[in-house]
Amino acid sequence: MNPAHYVDGTFLHDEAGAATFPLTDPVDGTVRGKVPEATRETVNRAVAAARTALEKGWGRGSTQERAAALHRIADGIQQRFAEFVDAEVADTGKPRDLAATVDIPRAIGNFRSYADLLYGRPERAHTTEIPGWSTGTGEALNYTVRRPLGVVAIISPWNLPLLLLTWKVAPALAAGNAVVAKPSEETPSTATLLAEVIHAAGLPAGAFNLVHGHGTDAAGAFLTSHPGVDAIAFTGESATGSAIMRGAAAHLTPVSFELGGKNAALVFADADLQAAVEGTVRSAFTHSGQICLCTERVYVERPVYEEFTAALAERARALTGYGPMISAAHRDKVLSYYRLAVEEGATVLAGGGVPHFGDARDGGFHVEPTVLTGLPQHARTVQEEIFGPVCHVAPFDTEDEAIALANDSRYGLAATVWTRDLSRAHRVPPRLENGIVWVNCWNLRDLRTPFGGIKDSGIGREGGEYSLDFFSEPVNVCVRI
Ligand code: NAD
Ligand code: 6OD
Image 1 (cartoon, rainbow, N blue to C red):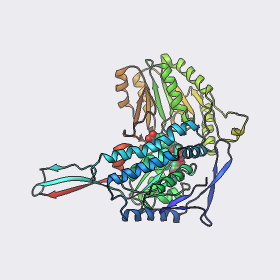
Image 2: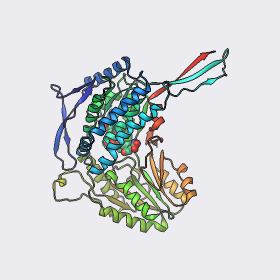
Image 3: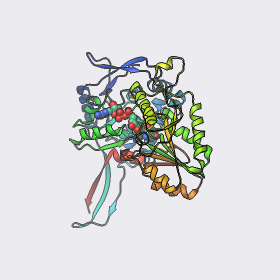
Image 4: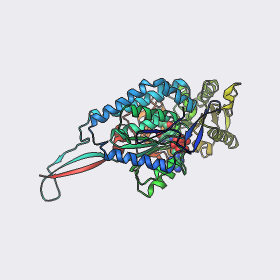
């Protein structure tokens, strides 16, 4: 498929003279399509269409109407499930079962969970009455209503393209905003299918708009620095977050940021070691490490360090069927860290290079699942986000030391704790400087829980009411009695 912009209820195919860029298959490196590059004019049209949709009443309807619309979108994705899976696999090269069991079902779940949240709400959501007390002249009844922010820009990355796009689009629409979305230039296909589904679901023209293109000095920057945008929800690299913030500063546009991570796993000697090894195989190597929640630093209590490390390396060497890096550029970045690790003194226990398949995949962007040991805590390989199938394992001696090592990072997204000690399981998580801590599991998600990071890993929280809070503004109404 050749992706198209969707602006003001219309798909813009093959605009005369419009620039395009190639869509590459990361599995074998072949070019499989072309993507239109949105101009500033196209972005302006999308923002104007979103504003007009609001002026015509989108967002002022009942919560029940919007909930029903979200369910129709979820139904539409469900009906075209196989197409969505095909498109996600084609863009990312990720294993088919991952797209079919995580990405696309979660996208459906994103719409359904926000629809369900809306059903329970009164028409004037979040109404809180505070009767009987006032600093002024007489009694008053205070209550709070929430109103949508207006036109919101949504910028999403390539690693979980539909999951992370819908994770923002669903609550933004649920709260009554009009959306202009820009997916990653690497993964435009499921976003285009989503626009088709939203079109078929009967949302008014302009309530949802989609523009394709690059970020820097292109569609992403045109959108996030646009004076007509009332809020920005972004997932991607921390450095990109800084760039977006600079562009947004001129208009004081509020931001919600989900950024990078360098997530730690702490394996205590009392843990179920087999579960910890299997859990770390999942947390380090799922989607070839291209999930912001993936573990790149593992700290293991010394008595079980050798046994754990040997078992992890053996499992990593035995992995098959893994997908590629998203692009040649990202493959090269990950390989540069594999080389840097060796220069910094690492011992490579598994992987460390490029696999050879003897088929078309040798033209693609694969790297080997890699396990490293022997680096000091300050090594760049231990401190910088690599975003590939690689983790470094180091020993620790005490609980305090483990916590200090985990916290020694500019990032603070997620951590995993492996222990069978009930007290430790509750004692350690609050001391970890992260937005999310999993105990004896990884990436187990309840969509109503707060999701996000601290330090350089983000600003704000997503999920359930947290997203609805970001995408709406509380208004105090004070009625004199
Ligand atoms: P990226 O920052 O390169 O790109 C993300 C999006 O931002 C893309 O759509 C891109 O076109 C756009 N963009 C780039 N520069 C821009 C600019 N100057 N102005 C506006 N938009 C711009 O990230 P990526 O490489 O697509 O994704 C990988 C990164 O995302 C990793 O750092 C990963 O940790 C992070 N991530 C974080 C989370 C989270 O929830 N915390 C989730 C997924 C990915
Ligand atoms: O599961 C989620 O809600 C979520 N935001 C996952 C993010 C993964 C990052 O790559």
